[in-house]
Length: 421
Image 1 (tube, rainbow, N blue to C red):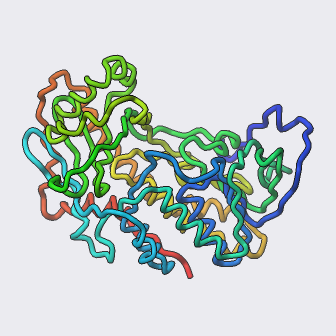
Image 2: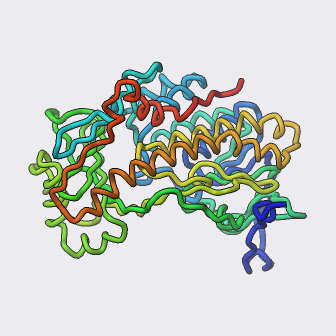
Image 3: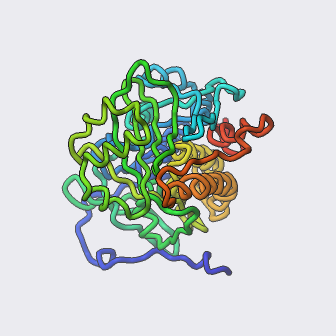
């Protein structure tokens, strides 16, 4: 037996203390975390009549600067569910190309229009709207239940098997008992912590400042990366706005904050001069979100009765904006593998291992790809002592035989995932 196989949940003092439980609810599957993985898995299970309870710690899905990029892989999954056209009725914009601009000129990093897909673009849509759309679909099925404001505090363990969770909210403590508990509660996963899992880092850390600025009708469309003056700026087209990521060296936030908002404006204009007439819209730090970026994955995603998916199992770098889509693919594979076992109340450890087996290679490949980009582009620029250092994009981006590889990898991964019917 390996060391990984002996992982056991961490028990807190609270778990050994007596408390008054308001109610106890039973369900086939308890999903903790209402992000992309959690809501899509809830819908897929509910469609098959499997009793599923989704617990979300917040009281709504509206959080600023969450990933807003819905890739072709997710759109094709929505199409298989008959939901793609309805989803595209919501306000959105489309990104068909990703371009890197350096002092040496511009290079097209990815052209999704050349991919063989019904949806050859990245759909830019507020993640909250995507999540609300999926949840509204799930509500059509009586086997689905959503509880907002449910702050999960404990795992229920009996004889080495996870049997559900206890959460606080709505006036006290509640208990949910389930044959399977799924943790899809994001990069700061509470279930990952409670289960005692330790992640392994996969790429150098960095920090990002997120903010929005108006977009002019004369601006180019699509997604852009700008490199210059020792800085990196990523810009995502959101119709009337640019969603902007200003990448800074790890640990550099306090220095930038101390220099003041005007120094930040000047830094932005130094990389993207076209924004000189708009940076004044950044008036104070409340408009700017700070994100400490890391990339990691768990050696093992499961315990008896417990499975982690999405960012809870593998924290993704923002490079390529793939987080939502790999989380959705996790959910589809989990539903494909586990549905029959859930219907027959017979979830086994090898079922959970199979989910990780099918998803681990795609995760490893995309994280390796992200690490190469971070080490060969981001780190070289951010760590340069020469603020005017030019940068030449990787040669493979100019080779016709390989030019579609980044677009394919970002859009679908190493292979597409389909809903099992």
